[in-house]
Amino acid sequence: MKGPRRRLEAPIGAATLLLGFEEPVRISRAGRAPDTLASVFCGPTTTSAVGEHKGRLSGIEVLLAPWAAFALFGTPQHELADRTVDPDELPHALSHRVGELASALAALPSWESRFELLDEVFARWFAAGTPCSDRVVRAWAELVRSGGVMPVPRLAEEVGWSVRQLESRFREQIGIGPKAAGRVLRLQGARRLLAAGPGQTETAAVCGYDDQAHLSGEFKAMTGCTPREFTPARRGPGGVPDGDRMTGEATSLVLTPGGGADFPGPAVLAECSL
Image (cartoon, rainbow, N blue to C red; front, side):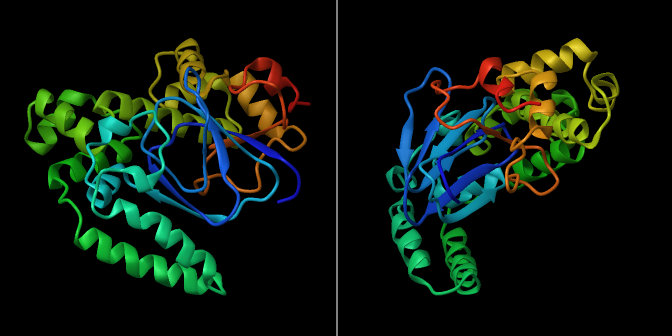
C-alpha cells in the first residue's frame, strides 16, 4: 500500500488475530488511548475502531469464531472485550509464541508456504488449547444462523441452560453476552443489506429492528455514524477499502489520513463522501 491509510472498522461477529510482519498499526477506540502494535488480538466488540498506518503494512489477519479464540488462548474473553492487545501479553502458555510465529511467517518465500505453516501451527495450538463448551459453540451457531435475532431465553432453552448460565458462559468464552452478540450480528446483517441497495425502512424490517429510528440509533451507537453517513461514504471516492475484512460484508470505510481525530465523527466521514 502506498501512502498513509486510515480505516474505520465496524464491529463484526469474530475475534481478530493480526500477525504483523513489518510496520505497526495504530488502533484507536473512543474513550481509550491509542495502541500501536505489530501483532494484534481483539475479541468481539460492540464499538468501532480506527486503524491507521504510515503507508506500508503486511501480515496475515486471521478471523476466529469467538469461542475458537477462547480455545486458542484460554483467557476469559470478557477480560479482553472492547480492547486491543499484544497477543504475546496474553496470560497463556501459547500466547508468547505468536510473535515467533509472525517472524517465521514473514521469513517464508511465498504466501502458499505461509498458509501451510499457519494451518499446521494452529492445528497444534488448538489441540493443546482450552476445551470450549459444545453448548457455547451450538448457541453461537444458532445466533449466527438467526442473524442475531433469536431471543436469549429461546437460545438458552435450545442448548439446555438457564439464561443466567448462558450469559455467564458467553461472557467467558465469547467475550460479550448473548444479547450484545445478537446486536453485533444484527448490525452486521444490516450493513450488508444497506450496501446491497435496500433502504433503511426495508433493512430495519428484514433485520429485526423495531423501525428505521431503531436501526439508525443502533448504527450510531456501534459504528460511530448513522447509515446516512456510512453507506454514502462507502460509495464516495476512495470510501470502499481494497477489501472488507469479511467477504461480502460492509465492515470497513476508508477515512481521510490525518483527519486530526482519533475517532471519526460526521465531519471526518463527510470528507469521504460525494
